Length: 152
Image (cartoon, rainbow, N blue to C red; front, top):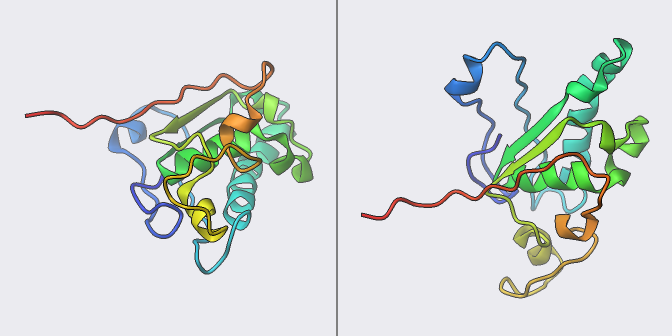
């Protein structure tokens, strides 16, 4: 999970509440823009999902992998789980993911991708780099959640 950064900064962390649940949790980093451009960070996210999936596959239990991320990590969660091409090189069917939890994610093409492609920041784009573009009936269960600020 990445607390901030828009694919240009940030660092991994695991919420304390998850560490107390008796489950295995992995937090991973990925290469950042502008040192790399799209789709490098999506490929990194797919590799991160593939690693524990490979371990689970050896035990025959790949359907217990849950993928979650916050903000840019949420965007990457949605892309890896909804667009099947990213896990295909690892011989993993994205439909086998137990569930996706993109938290505070962009469902349209991420603003960093738009910036790299010189598309105006406020121009909404739903293309191959938008999770919404890949929504399908057979996708893993997915819960898009948006954080809201408390009003005083």
